[in-house]
Length: 161
Image (cartoon, rainbow, N blue to C red; front, side, top):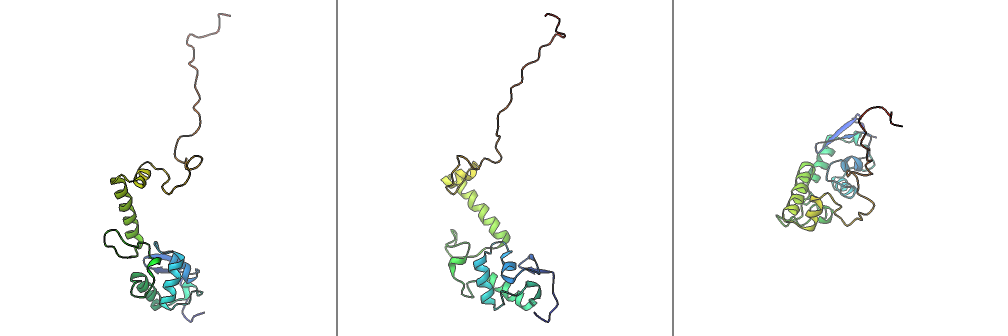
C-alpha cells in the first residue's frame, strides 16, 4: 500500500466515506455522482481506483474534488452529467448534494404549477413514470374492510325468555 497512515473516515466533497471502501465507491457516495461518473473522475484525477480510500493522500483528494467541481474543464463528456440542457441556462451542468435536491424539488413544483400530466401525478401521489397501478403502489392508503359493530341493546338482563 502507501507509506501514509490509514484514515478510517475520509471526507470528499462534504461527505464522509469509510476508509475501507475502494476509491470509486467512496466517490460514488457523494450525492449526485453515479458509478460511471465516479470512474471517469478518478481516471481524470489520476488516482488508482483499486486503492482503498483510507490510504490516498490529501493531494489526491483535492484533485478528485477539483474534477468533481468542474467536470467540463477536465473533458468529461456531457452525457455523464445529471442535468443536460438545463431549462434556465440551456447548458449541460452537474449538480451535487443540496443543489441537486433543491433543483429536483423546484422542477416538481413547476410541473405541478403548470398542471402537466407529470405534475398531476406528483400532486396526487401516483406513479409518475408509467408503472402499472392496479396491484402496486398502495402503500399509505387504507386497506381492508371495516367490521360493522352491532348496536348493543340496553335494558339489562335476559329475563323475557
